[in-house]
Length: 349
Picture (spheres, rainbow, N blue to C red):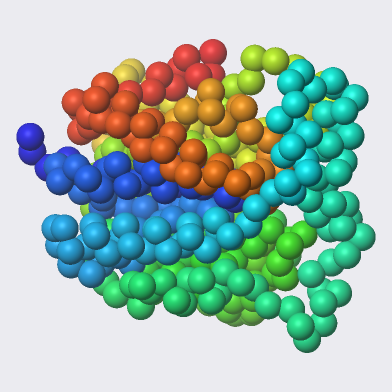
């Protein structure tokens, strides 16, 4: 099998990004897959930085093993968070009455954290504030060093002042840029970075608000046509949410999928123009879209576990991501370089 060059687009989703961890691990096992470009937001930026920095260490297994080492380190830090044992014990009872379920939602650390973030700001901590992501990124076994080897890496963040997306690429992808991309404003202070286009120092929040992930940086002529999106936030839910927690979870999913769906709709429009031969002489790339996803697993999780993952959840998501990537390789690897494996027209019908 000839080597197939792809781009990876990595969604953000807090601790749910462990799903992408597993998917990336599976792709790195396949020597016929070459990752040429990476675009990530939030947790996707963390995964992308770990992957790109590792692959820059050298060709073949050397770079792949370094990337795996980086990813293992990143997620070993996240895995230190655990849920409340009392809440887990109550939920282990079956059946759980709806009223009791709502009560335990209020008792959980997730609810406490959400309540506290409505009262306290990360700016209230004064000189004691620290963003733990900085230390994690700097202490990766193979850190970002601005090297020009390996895949091209893009991470997106949201400009607090303008609300617009900023995509960091090349030497701009520093530890601060990745921290900006993963900056949830209720938990972390905005990350300030100089912007040469405005000539001022700008503050940035999580990239998931404006591009989750941004696809357009991957459309340059030197990158391959294939864009493989690793979906963290489920696209579809067949049931109508009823409880306050369920409603908030679905609002979260819709919000963090909105920017991706806008880009996919634009891509579908360009594909229609290509099919109708209406782009003669116009340099518009006809990209091929693929997705690694598991909506069944993701719809079973509440958005709150993105911040406070239950014990064992990260390992479960890692395994689910690896299994989803394995299914993708089994059923859609032949499509790479040839055709889409996602029917965008059906997605928007």
